[in-house]
Image (cartoon, rainbow, N blue to C red; front, side, top):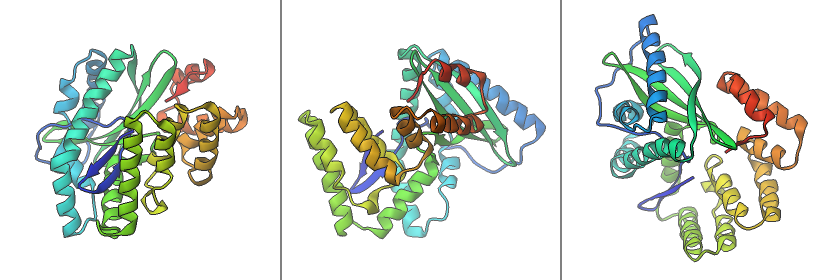
Amino acid sequence: MRILMFRGLYLVTILLLIGCSTNKPASHTELTLENKKTIEQYAQQLTKSINDYDHVLIRSSWSNEAFAKRVKNLNNVQRNVFNYIFDKEIKDEIKFNNISLVNHVNLKNGKIYVSKIEHFDVHSEITFLSIFDDSYNFIKYQVEIINDKPYLCDLFDLKSGIWYSQTVKNIINLNSRYDMFSEERRMANLAMRSSNDELRKRDTLSALYYLYEIPETHWVGNGLSLMKLNLALGVSDSTYGEVLETEFEHDQSLYLKYLYYQYWNDSVNLNNVYNILKGQTGDDIKLDSLIKSKSLWR
């Protein structure tokens, strides 16, 4: 989880994002049977390149222009804001996290697999399963055919439960409602700066407390909840349990349900979470094995 500060803008992103290349001419192409086969082959090629510790394919097959078109329904001012922060910050963050994805799989002795491929009218969605010694995670990419080649154009992290393009749009809308002179924006930025200052002092508990000073107007998705939980883990098990209880009251996302039911050993509700997860990820036999071995989704 990373919190990005864009000249006073407060943006919650997800832990693992995807890489980028130079902009490519983009136009929606209705998928043919041949296109679908090409995307399926690309999914296997991308899997192999990640497992081979090769960053080239995932970086070269990301389209900035196609992603920008996914951030829809912005007015002129909002579009200018998006263009600015994308050029100055977001595209570099995407590139960094893409490299980190490949590095993480390999440095942690993991393996990535294609879990599910769904084809739609003009795009496909590829879900990948990453497996490590005692944990696993999922990540989904949207893929379009651009100039007869497959390009990544968006990311859905199952922990956040939202497409990255929508996350960016939500943040831009948020900062349109609360400009740099608003009390809510001032409080959110001050709380984040104070929390980061305490982390630099290695005072995890104080850093956690400051996150609770962020006003509800600036709670976007479950990113802030996950940040609180990550900090609470560094304090104590009892603190983690308390934070989990309070966050679960207002965040009923699938991943928060998983964390909650897993912590309290609620096998019935946890099994329901697993069934939903299987439906979203293709009911891969590997996931059944991971669940039986009590591997953690993280």
